[in-house]
Length: 427
Image 1 (cartoon, rainbow, N blue to C red):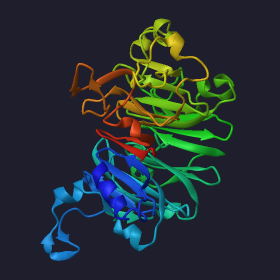
Image 2: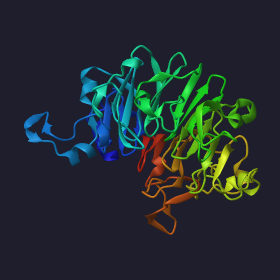
Image 3: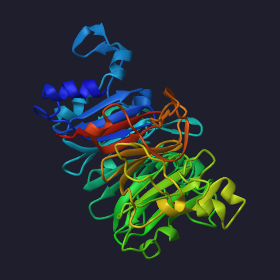
Image 4: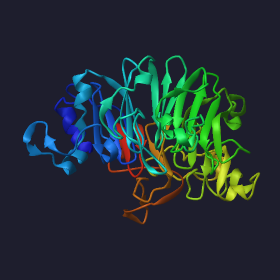
């Protein structure tokens, strides 16, 4: 894939000679990127229209031929409908089979489909509308607002307006929509509705739960909480409406810091603070939280039974010291040394997959931890660099050939795959 986009860049296909990719998103089994010209490229599995284009049937360029679906799905391709309407994207978001694009004018385009516990659920819930939206389209309820951020969970979406309000829609069986949707009227969840939140500056999603951060730095969570992934002690297995996370309040974090990003996987969540610290909560049975055996939350837990499977309050995730020529991928080491303040390896953003996480440092390095049965962690065993690490207890730097020639700008953690946005370091 790196070779594909390198060639596209050299040929000026990404916004002029030498232009590249601006942003990316990894979904369940598909990937979206935005180039410097604002064009959206998609590739991967087109289940339920996730790619926003046709990958079978007559070839639109030559109707006498049939599209080779394998080639069409695996080849990054520009979404022509967005190009034709001169929609200039600035960011994208991807769920299991649903995708969003945010334009420079603050407008949204959406495509794909949502699924529920019973299977196929639909796209927009309008009477007579198709279950799958194969091409990018507008959502009528979202045409009057200007949006500044988008986020996708497994089968639900959030959109943040410039005035600080949050719209939510999709599947709501785990209360991830922040509102009660009656079983007999569950299709109403497909209609975007505004939550009773104000002054929100950032949003995020887990597979079945959601987050919002207000201008004071208060983090709200709602949705599935069976593994305590919402980070609110004492709450039920489902949190029906946005509820503040006490442990992440700026007064508790100290040092004048606040949470700037919140994201989640199936049953765990990860948070980044303005001073580069990382916190996590939720299930830990497969190393999802990135904490070692000497972590105080493990050694001396408030609830010993709960600590065997989860952390109900966000805990600090220590990172390794900066890499050196002798040790390009150092271990985290003892908690007492790794938990110093200010953090020795400040993190600027995270991306959370099913049961694993990726973190990008201020220095342009990328780290992974958790459970990655399909090589999602990007790590190999020290004794055999051809054998993949399937579970990593604490954050570990991902390295590859000539890794120090590249500065990692962003990372996308999908259902079973990862993508990195990197920039060549000029000598």
